[in-house]
Length: 257
Image (cartoon, rainbow, N blue to C red; front, side):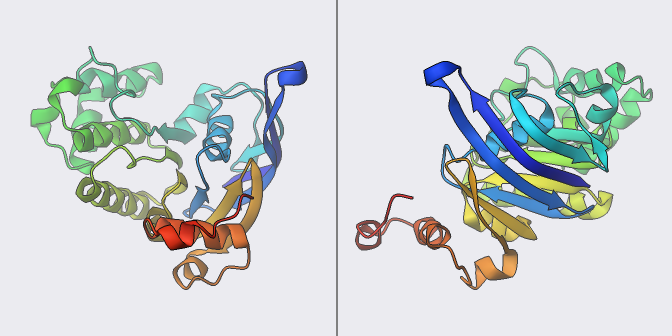
C-alpha cells in the first residue's frame, strides 16, 4: 500500500545544508499498522511530511498503492491519504465550528450529502450531534483530537498518517484515542503509518516498527521482538530502557549514537 525507497531529505543550502533523512526505506502492506520511532530530531516526522506532500525537498521514491508520487499532490491523493497532526490545539481553525471543519473537505472534493457524512463520522469517533456546532475552545484536548480524526476520515481514505496523535493528551485520554484508532482501522481496513517516540504506544498499535536515529534507519523489528526485548541493535536497546522511566544508574551508562 505504501512504499518508500532511498528517501533523502535536505534542508538549507551551501555550508548550512543539513542532510536530515538519509536513505530511508520501508514498505507497508494494505491494512497494516507500521511505526516509525526514535528520539526527537531523528527524522521520523520529516518522513511523514514528505509522504503527505508538506516537505518537497526530498529525493528517492514514494509510492501509494503502486502509484509513484511526485512532489506535488493532487485531489485524488488527498482522497486516498489523510493525516492526523500531533497538536489538537493547533490543527483546528479557532474560528470554525466542528461542522464547518468537517464540511470543508466534503465541499472541496464535491462528495455531496455533507450533513449525513458529518453526523456519521462524529458518531464513529465517539462524539454526538451536540458537538457539531461547537468551536475548538469549547472542546477538551481529547475531543479536539477526535474531531481531527473525524476530519481525516470523512473523505474515506485508505491510508492514515499519524504524527504522534496522542502525545499532547493526558495518559487516560491517550488510551481512549489509541483504542478508537485501533477499532477504526479494523472496521475500515485502513493502513496506518504512525510516528511516535513512545515505545509503549507503537507496541500497542503497530505490527512492525522502524527505529530511526539522526535521519538513518537503525533496524526494523516486529511487535513481538519489542515486547520480548529481542533486539540486536544497542541504540534500540537503549531506547527501550529509556522508555521505562527515569533511572539515574541506567542513564549514566547511556552512549551517544
